[in-house]
Image 1 (cartoon, rainbow, N blue to C red):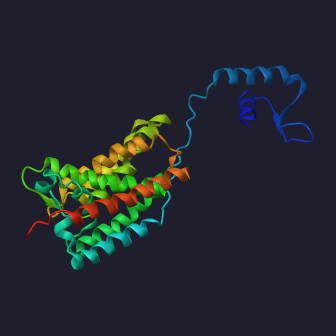
Image 2 (spheres, rainbow, N blue to C red):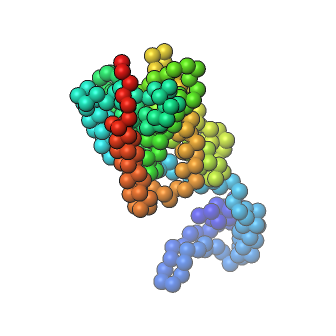
Length: 277
């Protein structure tokens, strides 16, 4: 069809002939136009070697993994248990206690919430964002990556807070998931040589959502920003291994690590001293 357009531009009549038997597709021209047609096609191919104007169409590959519902059930379970088993004093992220060696609070605080409204906000937005992360990176890989951004958000709050600081909740993990989705855009698009405006569009969209939902006056800004930034960095790194979500072994291993990083910190929290309120 391309060659037919070339010949039409030169005033040469041609008919596209479909494959018959062992013959392939071709163009039928009058005998007296053959040399001129062959020359035009040859020149067209010479001038378009490499097809520099063609770019591969980018496929976002975003799929939703309903396994994020399991994560929602987990935070609901911990919210139910924290009032009955006294989990909050033992698991809240307290910068003073973390500095004295209780590192597991960076993990346990992800599973605690201040009240029903706090829980509902993280559960609804997190269900969507964690599900997209799991669909993009794989169920196990994505879930572990999102969890680690929540831990990193707590670590950022611990390191950057000017004084004693306490925090709890899965919002760092939620905004870390947003960072994971936005952070993959730069290396992935750069490798496919897309225009710069497309390379930064995902980053800008993520930042705008962070500002809209994560920087309110009553929010844990340090944990939100820390989770988002760590998600950007981790997402950019995971985008360099696009086949990782397809590997069942990697997802299984990451799923086991995720489970271990829930149980071990809570086991340590149950053994450690509980501060008096």
